[in-house]
Length: 272
Image (cartoon, rainbow, N blue to C red; front, side):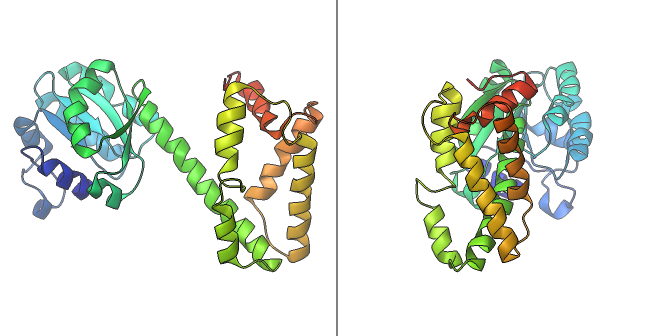
């Protein structure tokens, strides 16, 4: 990913590169890099590497320079860099990368951006050179929070897709046919996002629709089918429990998007 970022930036700026592999570097140290740069982009393998680099880099940067963290780390890991940056008068922005290396090279990826307005403004020429697709999320760390939550969806959905495909295949539905079905807008993959989350949960509209008790019934059918077919379930099995809790909470006749009420109660937050 660091190489892809460098390729994007090389077309727009005079570029200096530091890497632990001297063959990939144009400068000998982060401190030397700081002497050449008024904006620095980090693309590192883990949070400890970011902390080590920033501790050396920030004091050597000119006041008003901007540091852009693109490494996938936790929100607290980004905020832990703020002290060194503030002491040096350096702006700090997190710009999590939504997709992969190929999309970065093509300039089609999206950046999930967090930071103070002045810091984001200082980073804008670099961010714009990487991609025009940018989501401004909020305070420092919010870009990484969105990335971690997005990845949680991706990784959990991958398990659900494999479980459901195995379940369909064991019941005589070919995997390629099932995959084609899931790609339909009204199928089980896209509709929970487009209709239930965006249209119902975010507006608090739980009247009509598919009632919770019917969704719970369908979930029971899936568990029974898996048991009969000998297909092990993990994510789908775990996802059944909230439906039982929702019925116990008196939500049987509300649209099953009302599952959101459980998380609102548990976290003390509202999705609306």
